[in-house]
Image 1 (cartoon, rainbow, N blue to C red):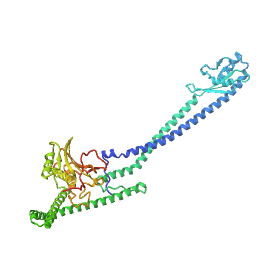
Image 2 (image 1 turned 90 degrees about the horizontal axis):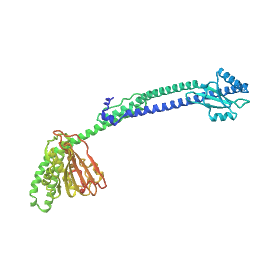
Image 3 (image 1 turned 135 degrees about the vertical axis):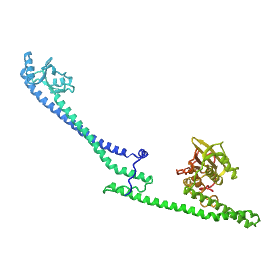
Image 4 (image 1 turned 90 degrees about the vertical axis):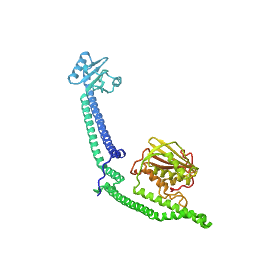
Length: 502
């Protein structure tokens, strides 16, 4: 059902990166699984560690009470009995420290320093303990020997307990790492399979944007993505049909324009000859007939210009207009146009010699239409400026007047568009459209900036060297306008401009 979209180009990957979303989903999956597993493992380890240490303390406290009772049998603590007490406890596998005016450990290797807090608790007649968490890992539980002021501290070695807890911690850490790796694998797989239809749809949309209207998405299954693909295919089919219909309508319009211009050319030529003869004899006609004759001559001239414009538009649409490039002095060409059309009193051309390689006939057509539009619809002086900017040449046509309303700027270069459609005088509405097409053939751009009440500037932007022989690709027209003042214009725009002039 349609062809598969082409693979994404480098420029496409720079614009659309579905891998980013896939990476984000994978990271989110890993974070959720890793945090959950980490909290569970860490909490379990802390609870078990506390339970094991508490159990060890309870066992050591019970053993210490028993040892204190046994120590009471060695009272009074003479030197011999003290030695027998220490030897007896050490022989039974218990390390103790006896404190009575001095300190005597049963094994000097197990004689940790006793803290003041522990000594104070024991001196108060209570059972106290201290735990060292360093390399020795010793638990000390002590109390007063019943019937004596002597103190006995029982030492418990907790290194085996600490080693077991360390093994448990390592095992939980390894399990957590395994969970994170598993979550990354599962998350990446799920994200890839979930976003694969999205990436396919993105490639299909790009293919349609590039003109491959036959592109369709495969529809398989009954999930949400299948419904999405079906809707996308329906949209693509409707778009393809609509574009085909518009293309056919455009072709009919172009054929109609060409046919009308061709059919009108012969009778208009005859009318022009008759009007020329009539103009030579207008002075011999009575007053009412003379006025009617003048109107007839004027309308025949307008009709001839309209037919010529239609013929040129049809040739441009058919792509039969080639470009003949030669060296041209743009300011000199503009001055010749102004002098030939009798605009020297209103139009000023600034700038010294500025040469470029372009088609002089088409450049003359563009400049003639722009200057004619400014003279006909502007007020005050019209100024033409030429300047070079790098490998580009700018030609600005400025005029003074009320300017062009902002809502008309986007359609100013449309064919037959006029700001005041009710106005019967002026041009055909094709002048600016013809200027735009010729500017494109020269590889240039035509833009307009206007502010009501201040003025308007048309800018022709051309390369140093226009393409030879074949028309340039259409790049679209840039419009810019505002109802507010624009700092670009020193001068203004005339009254009620149209979409173009002959």
